[in-house]
Image 1 (cartoon, rainbow, N blue to C red):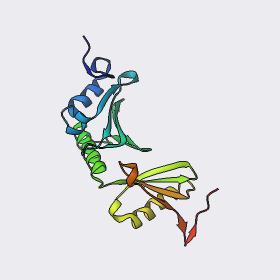
Image 2: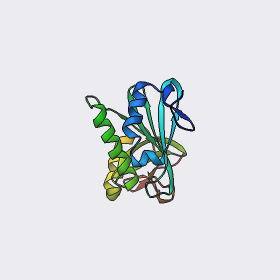
Image 3: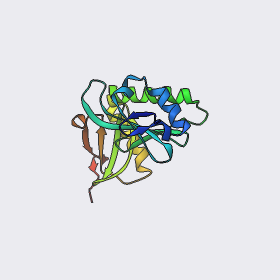
Length: 173
């Protein structure tokens, strides 16, 4: 007999790590709004595409696989547990990150060169000027970029900026 938890999820096919992940989140309010699915090699994913306020939003995928939990949205990923972090602490950190994302306490600075995505990092949306400057210093060590998008759970509230150094716009090529 299968322990089916949604149209596309089967706990019998999930690894023990994935089942532990499911048990830790199944009663969480956000998880009850999401969709569960089983993936290759027993991975289990929770997809959240409805905000806590009930509106549609950019999807957040939370995947449990290979003794890791990955929070992924809009080209950004965080893997838990961090070195030395317990499973319970990782679940608490995951819930806090997810809460902050949907509450607007963090946004993503997503950097592009033309239409090519080059990297994303979380920022405090209430301190945009200094946060974009610090994020630009980070990405400039990795790639050339010419614009940044401040991404949120809702695309319609995203902000778009061309980048300049010493008042000179970085050219698009």
